[in-house]
Image (tube, rainbow, N blue to C red):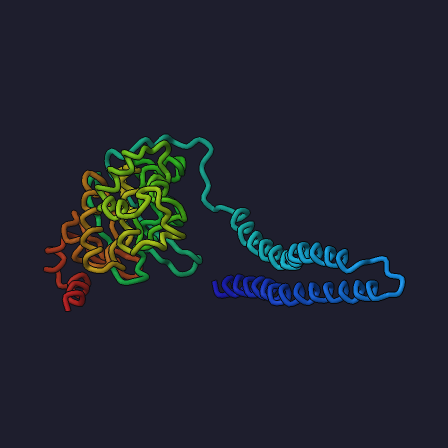
Length: 358
């Protein structure tokens, strides 16, 4: 991992240095050459005018100088192109690496149909490692019945996010299996599998586009009425309508024109519009202030109704009503049960709860 990071870091440094060097030289060189050209023309033209048998008059010379000044700026742009082209090539190289990257997730030749979820999700004796050395998950068994909410809690690095990332097959398990209604997720089409799952993450994934297009992302032929209804359920409609252009307002790169709570509510509205039977919540309220958390939590509760939900929680107060709470420690489920039952155990969950109560 360290060698890989060092290689990528060195490649980025070299690319940035190349672009910076050309950028530093582009403006001074273009100005110098432009000034040199003007001085040369003035000297040569002046010599012709002042000569005894000059065929060039002063008005004609001024006319040529006007033409020169009109073309000098486009000529300077050629020098700047020498900076912009390598900058574009450096960006293209990085994008090209992503486009040509080998996807380790493979589909079988004759996948089984998966039209929905009718019974349960099962994680059967799951073990997983990113580097093949350190196990992030160890022999995890978990059953998620349809319509239930399962909460995952634990310290950072305990394997919570890794566990939920295995369900949509962002990674494949090395040991064990994950099934939906008894069908292994490796035996179905990835597109069908992911169409059943909605995600609301800690960092909302938004695009430099309008409210409408961000909410409707991933849902073909979504109507304005459907988008507005989803936004109302997500507590997003009111602040959207405060904008001059309403749903046609551009929210900036990664939603930079919005607050953290507003970005989360747009992400929730997208999940509501998609209407998936399975919902993954990855610390969706951990980075919000109290008022934003209240609004987002209300929207999440509406979203979770009638859906099968796996929620990763940082604040235990948000998952007290979960059907089952699983406590992960160093990749293993060490405790499980309802909130009150886990407090009575006086174990790891009780310590987490006491620390947050301080």
